[in-house]
Image 1 (spheres, rainbow, N blue to C red):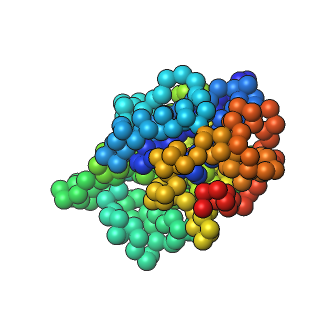
Image 2 (cartoon, protein in one colour; image 1 turned 30 degrees about the vertical axis):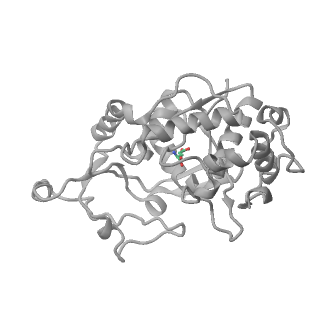
Image 3 (spheres, protein in one colour; image 1 turned 120 degrees about the vertical axis):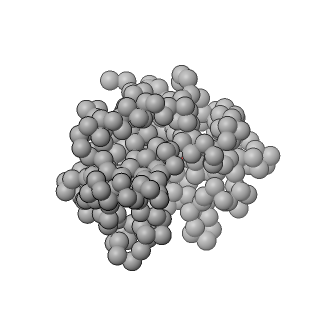
Length: 305
Ligand code: GLU
């Protein structure tokens, strides 16, 4: 079967080097297998993701020489499709309204997981219809999906075996926010499945979301994709890069470097080449192999300091 990979950035800012590394590895893996690479704009939260940032992402990817196949879907335009899958979950009796505020969710009673996520304490899991009607008078509800006490395992191209018990390590999760916006967890599964994606490459910070996504894939009758969660880039203080590190966004990098310099430095940091010499992305395709990509966080290449 042909590999169909994808790069799915959220345009809440300009891409930073970590996003570029993700795009590069998704591109190399797909192209190495003579596969396709799709691009999808994850702008569910349209207020935080203006179209101007999405346009810049497309332009930055072209500048980097990371080409993609086909049309670019925008999640902000696909709510009707997500609603159909929300209905599937509702018909299975798996959804319930949740009225908890952000403050309540972070209250001490809820166990905090090692990666900082908060396991939902189940406060609204068993509300009666009367209680729900009463709460609706004062608050809009989010929609949660009830997860079973079930272990989901998968084999990651970088991390190997990974397993999580949905009830103990994930908890009932939100599929639609109280403002009506669909949650990433639902949209990503529906979009990957409907566009035929069978290989997902993304940051290691998302690995703990993968079991719940695999569970949703199976519930909908989809074959889950393969996964590769890539190491994260850290600055010289050991802090993971984020969109707040504006000094490392593509806007400024494009003024200081050529695309080949950026690609070469990142490819070296990720273990793909021995020296951080300028190279075009397409020249790295024939030697790409996931076994070269390490599990540990990566240091920011020197040229960017
Ligand atoms: N949109 C997410 C991000 O930009 C990535 C989601 C994914 O690859 O599944 O961080």
